[in-house]
Image (cartoon, rainbow, N blue to C red; front, top):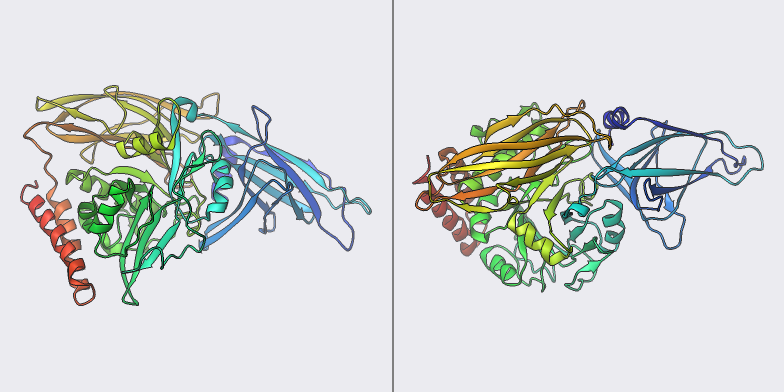
Length: 552
């Protein structure tokens, strides 16, 4: 966590100062065993959590589990001077770390539904002959329980080992994880022989960690950086929830999509700016759009120039001397998603951190799915693909449209349809604004005036009615107000209104942008890709040119 964000947390939730006196150290052993336990403040029971321990001198420390039954996994990633993520995820067992006398900041977090706890620990120089060490208890308090209200979270994209996942889903309070069992980075490479994941392929079955947390382990990422052994980037796509292992390389891509869908798997557009994304959306019939992707970090955004040439001028994105600002990157994803929806590609939103590759905790970006009744992975998957969901990097949304969950399609025999939007937006930080979108444009902005609630959150109630003319779609998004200028957001899946004989017309600038990107790829692939792969770009180009004929 950057220093500025820690100060924000301290201002938001207060500072807990714990002064303890060490009772052990010798001249030969100048460190003190610091022992601790994270507990649920309400139940007083031990819980898993993410832990940061940092000395006043800037040095980081990584506790171990003090129990033979426990686990503690170190995570260290840095992508720039201020893009540093270093923490330990702990199981619900005591921890221990040896530290020299001094002042330490311990930060405890557990997903989105617990109030982060920041403790200052002052460890005095021990007296001679005193070897017991010191202990600290870290009570972390839940401010909301989404699962009790039928909402269950997931992180679609993870590069952490399967053996880490039972620890991670509980430490981060993620209900569903789909870690990658296969990762292919070369074209024409079979995932069974060219897999960058060295662990044995898992069985295609749900691994329950407890009643509401678990892992579906058989999932593949094609992330193609080389063709014929030479550098030539195509892009990435995730295939999750497989029943059998995929046995073909790509490109071409359609045969893999057909095999995956026939197998009951679903496809996730890992990032909108990959070179091949406009082609694979219509040809692979991609199910999900990663609206909160693995470039959304808790620490400082660092990939300002990556895929900068894929952005469209019509989007008027926020930029700086390096390229994208954090908001510019997020807005690029939003506007790309809206353009695909306007073109008729009804992908539902998803979220994934790519944890293990970038400096971001597992579950920082997550998708919540509404699952009435008993939780099962099958019902969660069904709700995810139906769009009964929202994605978030911070706030939590519970929104209905005419009494229906997001993802619903309304059939209307009249050209005008009234949609009443009800529900709440809530966050641990003050909310800056809530926006209602119609066909990608902000149709209404609500500036919250909510005061801090007893549970420490800020909650805004919505009851807004909007008129939609003809076919189209609506969604709700919201943003926190951060003194650090970081962007924390939530976004519902869309609801659709279909008027017979009046399909939604895409916007000309959006379709022209997709056409330009595919034409650029056709030139770049000439003499590099095989004819059947190049032909797929021509097929996608024909689809967009047909859309351009009815664009406005």
